[in-house]
Length: 364
Ligand code: F6R
Image (cartoon, rainbow, N blue to C red; front, side):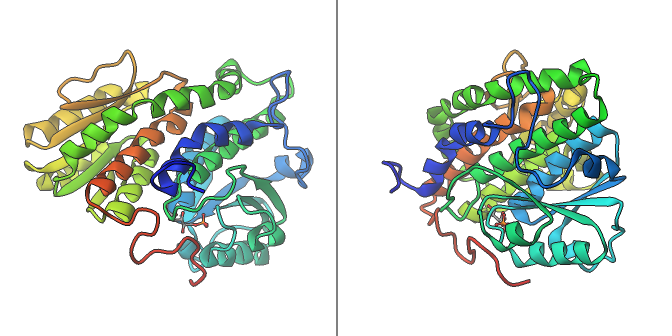
């Protein structure tokens, strides 16, 4: 059932391009308009909301961290993001004017279910982005959008994260469409046109597998890993660091790159690996100088950047195909999932069943 792959995780990483394609299918009409057939919220319902809150756990929360930035920028409306276990007890400011988006692969995560019930009790409308049809979250939420990732067996979530990103991008552009009946502004229409290209670009990311395997061998003896990024790249950093932690048992943390100098830079010394994610032109120069600060303390620097860009001073590079900046999170995570996978494999870890973890967490 692993289709010739050594682990479900590797198989599922390679299913990424197909997952993106399946998640786009039926939602991107020919005339380049986004539609969610079967969505039980009307355009009038969706335009009524003044606030949006996104809630999830782990990887689903990280997808939400990308979604928050997309929706906020595309809709110019406030979007909050919370970890589900924190949301519930935070006396959240949500009510009838709020759309609460709950993201979950399994649809059975106790924290996320509790957050949904709390949001409903406060009169908010709940929209679930979920992978498992018929799951509790899918049944109880006011509206559902299915990710089309297919069954995910590996405990570490990979293709489901991609599907969550694609749904969030579609949803953000769909809501933006409702707000501009005369047509989307050109910078957003460009994204709609670029979405169908993503599966093929993602395939190109995965073709670097041999290079990433070699990089994993170089990095495996590092004592600690920092994943740095700004804006959307910080959200990618969070997810990339989680992947490494959970399957390789190595210490990894994500930091907004600009925060390093406010403390954590003290931890950088030889033997510490720093993965700088730099896909956003707005912050490229700032990222470059943040990575130079790391290099000066003799950390090993790996930069993840689009082709045609060469940041100064990195020891290693992971090159991504170019795409609109907004969509880079969909591409940047794939090589970092592979990197985590091959580091864990070098260490002989039980990749599909990491210690202490379960696929679906049904206690709060
Ligand atoms: C990480 C991972 C977990 C889940 C989290 C939420 O790879 O798998 O962090 O993402 O437990 O699970 P779902 O999405 O099923 O609610």
